[in-house]
Amino acid sequence: MDFSQIAFLLILAAALYLFVSERLRVDVTAMITLLALVLSGVLDAKQALSGFASEPAIIVAAVFVISGGLAATGITERLGQWIGRAAGRSESRAIAVTMPAVAALSSFTHHVMVTAMMLPILTRFAKSRGLSASRLLMPMSFAASLGTTLTLVSAPAFLLADNLIERTGAPGLGIFSITPIGLALVVVGVLYMLAARWVLPKRGGEHGDDGYLRLDRYRTELVIVEGSRWSTRPLSELQKALGDRFVLTGWLRDGQRRQDLGPGSALISGDILLVEASADALASLHDDAGLDLNAIKRFGEHADGDGEPQLVQALVAPGSEFVGRSVRELDFARRFHAVIAGLWRRQGAVAPRLSDARLREGDLLVLWGRPARFAELAAHHGFLMLVPFAGEARRRVRAPLALGILLMTIIAAATEWLPASLAFLLGAVAMVATRCVDVEQAYREIDVRIFVMIAGVIPLGVAMEQTGTAQLLAQGMLQVIAGWSPLAILLVMFTVAALLTQILSDAATTVLLGPIAISLAQSLGLPPTPFVVCTALGAVAAFLTPIGHHGNLLILGPGQYRFSDFLRIGLPLTMLIAWVSAWMARWLWLGGPLLPGAS
Image (cartoon, rainbow, N blue to C red; front, side, top):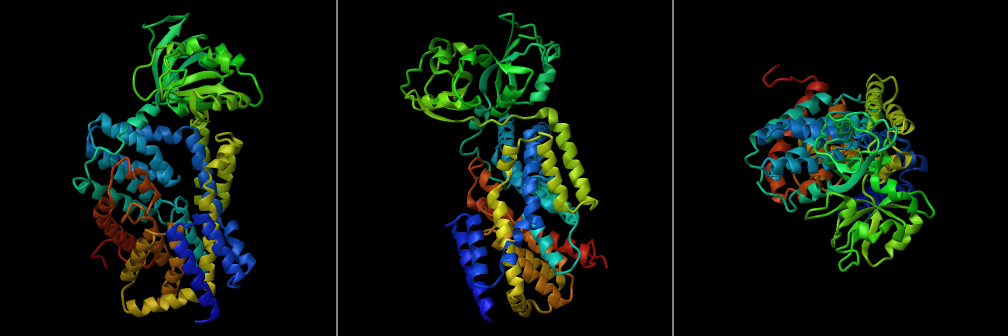
């Protein structure tokens, strides 16, 4: 073992310690590792920085932006709501519908985003039908991870695997090269969860779904603007455009409450709609040129000061002078130069008209005004805190455009009309250029930690190959598994990756084990592709613990799951997935039989 190998192993050990202990953020650890490789002379500067210009890093950043465009136009929310409606009333049907749909969503978007989107939808669905949320959330989260095996671009591990394979001189992976394996894994996952659903824990959840339901209930008033696009169109069209998180509680025309108007009735200029809306729907209402929040239309002239008007949230403090007084009595707009545009209350009724609502301790007010005035409000003892409004406006009119951009991106990458990195980069730019998503929001959507981590760990794989460490470790493994069949070796690579990914990210696991898989394949005189792919699959589709995938961490609290639940349910599933992955990889790249018993 020479100096470069010793230096690399020491750097690798330190990097693993920092990754596992999380003493530093993963992106910071990746950058420290990169610098250590250069300063020790293991890599030169060009090799160390190659990760930032690599296809995996570019594609991951672009996919985040495209996902943000789909979310900003309401497409992902609509799909999630459709899944909830299609799930019926039975537990088995809910699993059978939710898992394939969630997997399909995850194939071109970030699986954690899909899990976060489906979490409140399934929690509400379970409560409304008297089901246990814990019986639905785990299958959903597992399906989101399995969905990343459907395309090359849905998980960083596969992009890195493709990068490793191409460096050997072998043909790289196409965008749908792993799709046959992914489809088989999704089918196996659905069938397993349907068969094993009796083993799933039956718990109500630590927090229930009250928080999710009530956070959707911002009370506000909406006015139809003179000459707007909504004038003379039926209410049902507005409801369809805004989605399910928009509930009409009253309709005022000429100052009178009308009980005879319904979804088929035409809206006219000046109509006031009393509504309950989610944070995103509220922001969408405010941004719609044909609509306006009634309070802003009436009192917006009082919101003077510097800066562009914006929405913020303020919590009514205990003992506040506002408690017990109505919005009308406070004369809030003239006194504080800001407008109360919405109200959220945890419990209890709210007056039909926003101006008549008597404030209570803990009420959350949605305020509209200018930043200069918010500084004064933040210092007022009547408010406990003043924070930015959490809602993101949904640009629903651009939803068809966003879908078209996604479709063209997939076609360009799948037909190799453009390299995958350029196709997805073009798709991300198109989302911004067509205003499906704001530039600022697009930058926010990119998880910089993942981007930097991928760019930082790629040099680890380069160093492992260049120093000969990968070949050294592969020879050690080869002595143990000498004489084993290719199928058994594929299972070994999946298993090692499945164990390591419980403490490392899927990207880091693939980068560390991928070069070893390549050396093993070369030692056996076999193509490297199936061995690297099985390694990446083990890094992505292992469900042994809740910490192996970030999506599982999201459902841990709401489902009131225990660590043992994942091991009890995830271990048999992971063993099935390992067998199917190895069998399918052997069939695709080593000429093995598709069906057991076939020659």
